[in-house]
Structure formats: C-alpha cells, structure tokens
Picture (cartoon, rainbow, N blue to C red):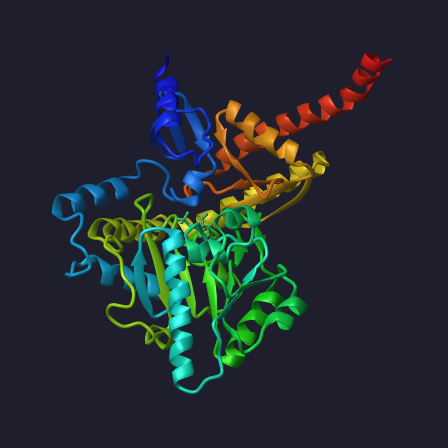
Length: 418
Ligand SMILES: Cc1ncc(COP(=O)(O)O)c(C=O)c1O
C-alpha cells in the first residue's frame, strides 16, 4: 500500500464522510506551487479556496509565525496582547469601517454579523424605531455552514438536511431590483449580500441592485451587510469588493486570506452599529489570538509592500483577457467574468466542467468548479502572467480534445448502431 492509500483507508474508517477529496497527498508548497509526496509540483489556481493569498512558504508569513509562536500563541480574550488593536487599526483604515471583532473562520464571522444586526435592531426598537428582525438574503448566496450562516445560505442542499433552520430569512432573486423592493419592509433588520458571489458562481452584483439595497436599508434604519469572506482582503484588486462600487456597508465580514492560512475571521462595523454590543454579549476563546493577529498584520503589510493589489488587478485583467480569447475559439465557454484574481469561466455543461477540472488535475493544475458549470480561479496574489499562459494552454488542449471527441461521436455512434 502506498502512503496515500494508507491514509485514504484510515480516513475512510476514522473520519466523518464530509469531504470528497482528490487522491493527492500534498507534503509541501513553494510560491504558487503545491508539492506532492512524489515531489511533483502543481500550479495552484485555487489557493486553498481563496486562502493562501501570498502562496506557500512566503518569508513574511514564516517569519511572523516563528516570531509570534516563540513569544505567545494564545492567551484568551480575558487579557490584552499587542495584536488586536494593531490589526483592527489596519483593517478599519482599509475598509472605511470603525470597529472590529475577531473570530476564527468565515462562518463564525458571519454569525457575529447576524447577531450584531439583530442586537442593533433591538437597540433601535428600544429607541422607538419601527424595525423588525427579518433578514433578506440573496438567491445563490453562500455564507457558511453553522446554523445562522447556513440559514442565510440559499441552496437547499446545505439547509434541508438540518431543518428546521433559523427562521426569519427570505431570499431575493439575484440582481432583481423589483424583487428586492417587493420584499423589503420595516420587518427587515438587514440586507445580506456578497458584492461578488463566490460559491454562487463568481457573480457580481449590479451597481443598480447594490445601490438600491443601500438606499432601502438606509430608509428604515436597517443594515446593509456585505460578506467579503471570499472577495475581500485584496483579491479583487481592492481591499473589499464593495469599494469597486463606492458603496459603504454597515457591517462587513472577512476571513479566508486574512491571516495567510492561519484560521481567522473578522466582523467590521460602523461606530453607530457597534453600540449594540457590550461586554458578555458575544465572544470566542480563540478569536483574535496573538498568532493569528501577528500573521494577519504581516499579510496586510506584505500585500502593500509588494504592491499586490495593483498586481492582482493587472494579472487578473490579463487572465480574463486570455479566457475571453479562449472563449472565441471554444463555443463551450459561455461567459468569462470576475474582478482581479477572482475569475470564472462559465461552461455550457456540468459534464464538461467536471471533465475540465479532472483534466487540469492530470496536468497538475488545480482549479475547481462551482455552481455546476462555472470554472473558478482563486489563485495566490503572487501569480504571474506566465502561470496564466500555462493554464490557458492546458484549457485550450482540453476544450479542443473535447470538441474533437464530440465531433467524432456521432459518426462513431453511427458505426456502432449502423
Ligand atoms: C462568501 C463566503 N462566506 C462565508 C464562507 C464560510 O467561510 P468558512 O468556510 O471559513 O466558514 C465562505 C466560504 O467559502 C464564503 O465564500
């Protein structure tokens, strides 16, 4: 038995069957490459689902982990350490929000945001405002797997097995302004959006829809909450994707790349909203620990020092341009979209999307497929044009072979049945 086979057998016996893993055993990483047990290198265009923004083994991350782990890894939130205020300052300066709460994951940050919105609505009611407790979320949204987050996540498959979900959530058709207006009322305490839906297929909000959500929320004192867990922290070329729209949320959430692979999430909000929480209402044992804070500070400083926002924009634009050129050669690519290094190509069939991911893997290039037909690319921000060229050439070969096989299929079929 190989080492991989042994691990697969052990996992099959010992773990809950929550993941359908690819049969590869990774043992290392360097830059934009993952390295398997045989020392084979894989070009990683997924970066641990949008986490490893600086790639693998970046000296700034390695150094921050080494330095901070020698000093302090964990102290709980009963005491002070240097990192939380320092990180909060960096995040508030870059997001336009005023205060931060630190969590450990995306879903947990989102739970914090939902709780904050309900608490704020309670404060407003106590001050005489006519405002309810309902959340308006969007169709195709994804906000996480814990109960509150799952209840605001659209797809039935994530919610239905765990019913009853948290009540008080209604879904609005994506980018449908009329549906948003029809469903909005004084019952709503918050409108929940991703500026660019991630799991929903890399779909950006329209300016019109986003602006309407902002203005409806403001009209009653409800909140606009923008989930930047996948799109935020520089992936789209700005710190937050909502900054492309010039729209200010009341609350935003960050996670994935925030601490360069060390688990961390954050809720950021305005001073006005922050008054809804006081000591004891919300908290976490691990959140905002010294190690995660030190690494997040290093991530932010490195993104700035290395000019990675501009780089993500430049290489992302190139990536999209190359995919568009590919789409002109292959009818099976229906659409190319995204922002910065959050990029997608929508294909005409789920079968082809699955095949493309598998064929890319055979060529040692990691991508994934979301929403059945959408090839998704969330590479490290240090990606270069040459890596894009490698991926495009591989996709070209795959689509060409597929088209060839399909063109050949009818005659082959004719022979078989003839
Ligand atoms: C937009 C968005 N929100 C929330 C989450 C949940 O984050 P986590 O998996 O860290 O709990 C994700 C994860 O994919 C996400 O993309």
